[in-house]
Length: 228
Image (cartoon, rainbow, N blue to C red):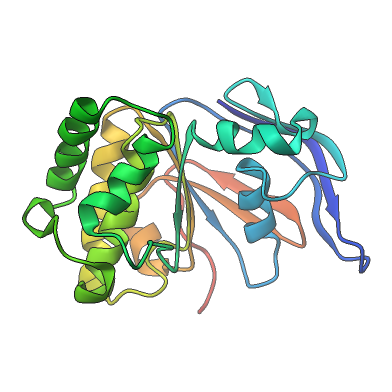
């Protein structure tokens, strides 16, 4: 599902953000990526959805070697993934329904299929009753739930989440985690970068800890392991 072999990422300023990482994540796993700020977590996550390209080594996602993708092929590749960001990245002039439907419209899915699937995922995230509202009319937790609905509407095999609870209060954070757990039970691989110690320690999953661009700990059912 996700395979990295001897991956290095060195930026033009000389910073080595990823330093020889090798890791495999299997279909259906739920993985937390943790570590102190500046450890290389964000680069590690960005390599998965080809926001960054490794300086050397292999990054293979769903059988695709991301280094070999041409720029014009990247959008098509990303359609196989669900990507959830800390800051939601919703389109402000589109309604809840339109934001989620947009992900299916770009792949030219049939309108009847779009409506059925969009309503399914909005029901999953508990927002079926807010389809006509705009992002500005929603709370932060609701906006993140729309973002998650959009990320899974095309039924990706992998969902990549970069600090998805970072801007949310504890109550909303737990609700978002409930949704991610439900997505995972359906067979979707979830990879989540997080600083949320409480969530990692209470909802035990595989924990990959990164420091200095290297994996220093990889434990199933592990703890966060850092002071905040």
